[in-house]
Structure formats: C-alpha cells, structure tokens
Length: 325
Image (cartoon, rainbow, N blue to C red; front, side, top):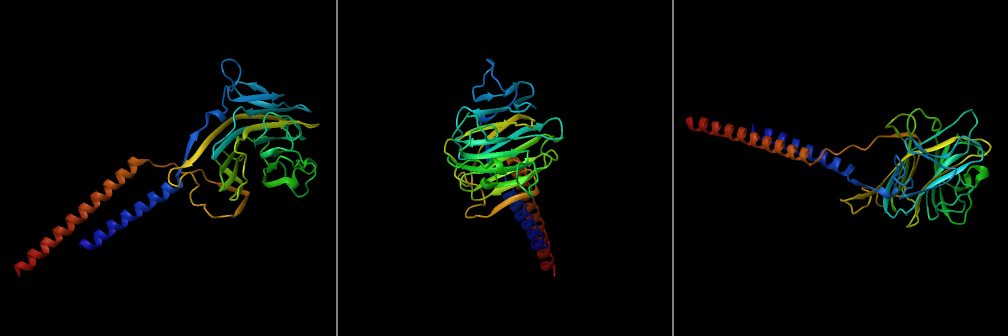
C-alpha cells in the first residue's frame, strides 16, 4: 500500500515542479520602464515644454488627447523625437496611435524611428532620408507596388547612404513587413509593439482588430546591428492626399533576464526568419508569484507525510497479524 501511494505523491510533485519551471522560463524576461522614452498624457511639463521629447513641424500637442503629427490637410509634416538616445541593449517599445480622416482617398503614412539622426525633417514620412538605423513605416497610400495589399507596414535598415525607394513604396529597401488592412480608422486602440534583443531577435506585433489580440507582423532571429546611441522618434507626412496621424502614448521598457545574463531565453544559435501572415500571438502569461510556489511545496510535503504515515500504519498492522499467527 505504501509503494503505490508514495509513487503517486512523487509523480504529483514532479509534475508540479515541471509546470512551475516552464512558467518560470516563459516569464524570465524582466521589464524596467524607461521614463526618458515614455510619452503619456499630458505630454508636456508644467512650463509647457517636455524634458524628454522635442516636437517639430506641424505637430500639435493636445494635452488631454494626443500628439497630432499631421492634421487631415495636404502637404503637412510633423515629428517628435526623444532628446536623449536609447542606449539599452534589449528593449521593448509599445506605441498607441491613430490614423484616420475623411473621404476614401488618404495618405501618406507615418514612421517610427530608432536612428542616429534626430529631429531632421525630410521626405521619408516627414523625416530625413539616408538615415542610419531602423525605420518602421506605416504606409497607407500605394504608389507602385503590384500584388501588395495596403496599408503596408515595413521595416528598413538604413546605412546612412542608401535612399528610401519612395516611388515603389520601399520595395527595394524592405527588411521585413506585412499587410495591415484595417489599421487605418480601426474601431479599437491601434498599437504597435517592437521588441529587440541584441544579436537575438527583432519582432513587431500589431493590434488593430481587437483589444489584446496581437498579430505578428514579422520576427527576425538575425536582427540588424543598430546604432549604440539611437534616438526614438515618430513622424508623418501628407501629400496631395491627407490623414490625421496621432500618437496617443509611448511606453518603453528595458528588458533583461536574470537567468540568462540578459539574453533572450531559448534562442541561442538560431538563424530562422519568420514573417507574419495574420498570425495571432497570445499575451505573455503573468507569473503567479513566490508565495504560490511556497504553498505548493507545503501541500506536497503534507502529502508525502500523509503517505508515509499511511504506509507505516499498514506495515505495523501487517506485522501484528504475522506475529499473531
């Protein structure tokens, strides 16, 4: 009787430990908010300036609602850039934004930047061309790219010399990308989440179909080398066609892993590339906390004690019977 009971308790303990270990691995990445690269309401300090951000062009700040990069009017451009560079090795940036306007024809789009240059207006979605670093483009107007569904979201890695292929919507410059029909004028909060682990991965996820439903746009496990001091920025432009382009909030986090020395768990030595085709990604599970694990151990220990007592009682009764006969 003791052996089956003990085996069951041992199996239960092993199973519980494996579940806990798996949960620990999936939650190993820690986040530290980066105040210097976070932009939330009311956007400005008490002196009507921002300590960490610089605004320019046609940008308008409405403290209770948005940072509007361009209004729904032709030939406008605006930008907002961080005043200090992002020097974190691993980071995550989540931006909520809105692109909308009147009529069926609209353009041109907006961009997210992590570049050596900052606050320089230009022809690439309101910012400078020949940039050095990473640009994420939310292109809402199709110029000349047959077979591609717009709006289109794409990444370009700039070397400081190569111009953006504007006539062909960046086809010659694309590092990765995905179609995002419905991202303009979405009925739910529109968000983009860019996650970067140096030498390990670069991932872009989008939310525009339903809240908390993240769609993988692309993921690269051989990411580009970004400038060691890159400025975070956003810009937008309109041409003959127009749209409102607004930033609602920006949340930036420094990422690290206490278990693997800051590296991303489970991705060492891989070079696979994945690009999203409307796939959903589930939100990361929240870790239960140390007290739950402590309670688990108490329950397991109590089970072992009960099993031991039952086994000992059965053994003692068996001995009494054998002595009696």
